[in-house]
Length: 271
View 1: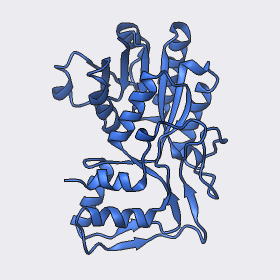
View 2: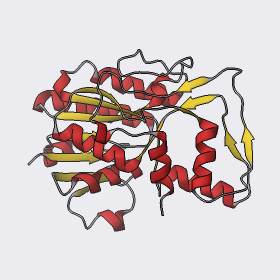
View 3: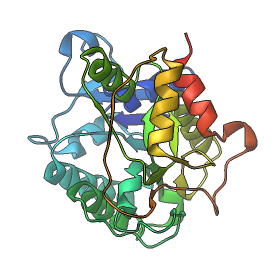
View 4: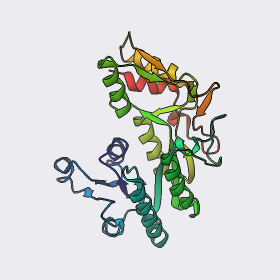
């Protein structure tokens, strides 16, 4: 049985992934806070990347696959991932790195595919690129880069934030000229499960196969959540459509693991 270590298993994506994988693999996870929730679970390990070297944890757990869903200080993340890369080169372990559509946020005229050149104007995007570039120098069988657009779901932080803004009677910022794709958490965990199970290699874009304008998406999402009189604040940062979308082309998943914008909205609004 493969042993999986999920970094950031107490977070939104990491915890959903732990729940998806724990019945099929010897699954371990790390947490930083919420000691009362996770400390009694011997599959969970406390890890603070700002003060600890991850080498000790890796030597103790000896995972076959490491999934990085960790969040926090960017500099500490870079150091930790370079420590992981050093470890996997010595042990033939595999690292699955959850990245972001923001690695392409400097390109606005078209959607991005798996092996397009990355370029970002944001600090977040540039930090993700730094780790991606280090992984791309590894042998193919030792890494996956999984780029995600915005991740939704019934109890996702994004949906909770949207509800909070509306319930407070505040205006909801929308971007009529931004073209996006999206995904939802349960499909993401199924996709990662498949990638691990089939030992798939390389870069994957795990967004919906279709695109929509961000404002249209948010309006439809609000309607599905039962809100009828939402105040929207249109934000125009361009006179033309600007794309922030990651589409699959080279590494497509089976049909049952693909997702559409309609599926994302349905999964995020179901009772």
